[in-house]
Amino acid sequence: MIENKTLYKTAEEALSIIKSGDRVFIQGSAATPQYLIRKLAERADELRNVEMVSITTYGEIPLTEERYKDSFFVNSLFVSANVRDAVNSGRGDYVPIFLSEIPHLFRSGILPLDVAIVHVSPPDKHGYCSLGVSVDVTREAVLSAKHVIAQVNPQMPRTHGDGLIHISRLDVLVEVDEALPEVDYSLRITSKEETIGRYIAELVEDGATLQMGIGAIPDAVLGSLTNHKELGIHTEMFSNGVVPLIEKGIITNEHKYRHPGRVATGFIVGNRKLYDFVDDNPLILMQRTDYMNDTSVIRSNPKATAINSAIEIDLTGQVVADTIGTYQYSGIGGQMDFMRGAALSKGGKPIIALPSVTAKGISRITPLINPGAAVTTTRAHVHYVVTEYGVAYLYGKNLRQRARALIEIAHPDHRERLEKEAVERYKYL
Image 1 (cartoon, rainbow, N blue to C red):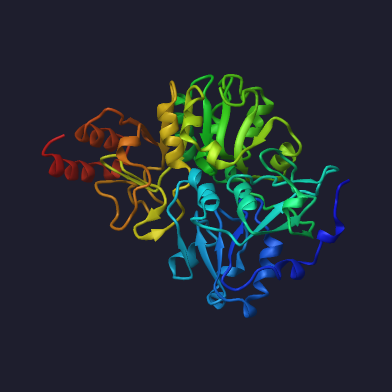
Image 2: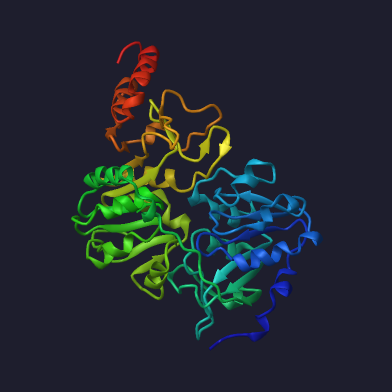
């Protein structure tokens, strides 16, 4: 085994690389290096104005706490639940950016990185570690940062693709043995999500190449695809629901133009069964997001079918997916990358899925988007919109036709009000 034991340090020794004023990248998804994050928080008294950069992270992030506001600032590229309060209360901020373009920020020096903190599998006999379940923007962070601190964990799956990093690229290694965070959104599926899943499954054609994220609706869609054939996966991420379809021979990837026969993704988050499944599995190809989310790459696959969620959509088709009014809820992520890529694919289908109302009964289909809300996907990019009341096809429709189609899939309790608003706006429907 090619392994330099002098690279191994304690967490305290490793994190001494970080200085006040540094910009520090933290790997995300299920690879969030939680041990090193906790240890970094212990240096708060001696550090000032350390900028933390990341996409979605999991677990507690003590660096965002009020008491550490002079030490750490979260400059998030995607707002996950554990940094949401900090971003919206002045202890952090958000960079609006397509997921496909984040590696360019690092590579070009627009957002130069002083340190990257990553979470890897142990080095193999050739000295290569794997970035495991999170290659996405992390590979470019490793290649661009001045210093790299790696949390080495035998419980991190070793994955194939772009995530292999030689230890010569790492400044210091810290050994840990911790389970990865687990999620299972199938437990949150209600009859509403099941209905939406069935509607979307009816839109998915045999031989399609799928992109879908994480959550109850994506899992409900996957659970409704058991009678489909020869599906493929090219997605920025996937979760637990993909594995049963692979095991049943429904996902075969045989019709894909890019990487036929393999599941291509940027990152993975799910349960232990999923992590065990992807470990050293050549079927799973982990790729960087500037490739995975490149519109020209997405469109090259036949029948690319992109399934994305929304917080609200107005009667013209404008999609708000990352803000609630002025409140920054999540991020732009890869929605536009895949919506456009699917639209340009031969036989492709870009789909927006959302429940018709919020938990408080407020209509998600609205005459106007909430004041201060940001449009994630423009009305010109939207083709299919799905709620538990059906499917609205907006492509090629004028504003009045769009309003009619969306009102038909709104919750019945809100249709009369929406019709009045539409008539006032368009004079008649």
